[in-house]
Image (cartoon, rainbow, N blue to C red; front, top):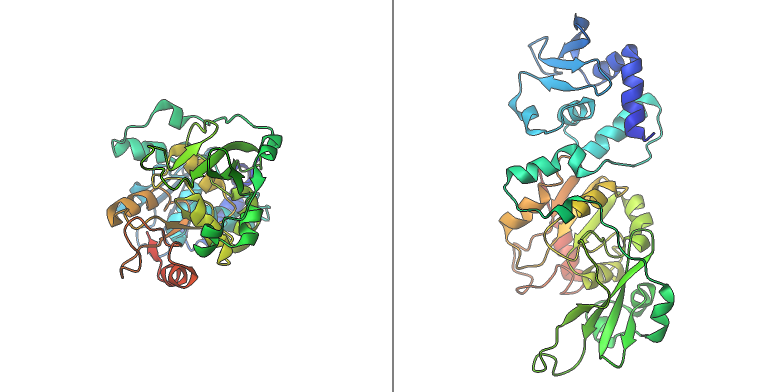
Length: 345
């Protein structure tokens, strides 16, 4: 049983503790006998004494009849009530309830479909393939296949900010025959699932070669690149920085920001949201490339704001060139952009 389930089970089976939680939230005029299996109370700053309803059922559904903002949440339960009153995300609400009840927080969060994100996206009339809605399974490769490629430190990448130590950590290799630098792609458990090759052939455009290719089919876009290496730091910092490209997260690591994982895209898919929400942190920083508009950046950020504290890095002072990532202009520029990140509510 996850900590989330333990909280609901504990409160459902102990009305006194549920009342104590409401008191600690600042609710007043608490009436545990308002109706059949229903508790009513007032918000901390409310004057309507029965505006908050908590149904005493295993799910603990909640409703606030005096505030329109509560209706923005697709799921309305005791966690949502804590979020609304404390003005926090789901992760912090879970942590607060666990502390109140003396339950260890295992950090396991439920998938976005349960939180109502799937419905949110459908309401936005996005076209989502069925494969995006299911948990993806990737073929696990034998790591011995990497032995055919020589480990390398790419000098060009060193000049771009990815130091030799970081390149060795991420296992960069050289496919001499095909003239490609290789980035091994691992899942969150450290299983090798693909290899991404970046051409260094000097005339690759004339030859019609693709700049990047996957040596093995990756399938559904749900990989947080480098997460298996950085998740301990992410937990320690309680934050995850999410740029688009693999090289961007490697550069961030080189700059001393080791709590970064790449999305591989600027559009957060349903499977990817599951993994972001499951990350052991309460803060998310989106660090998209310069060519992603403000509106598109905010659209992606708002997929997460009910569940994490979300910031975006957005270049308002034209420090970057078109299509550059926040990491592409060196450590100093990245730090300026990071320090001026913008909170999204």
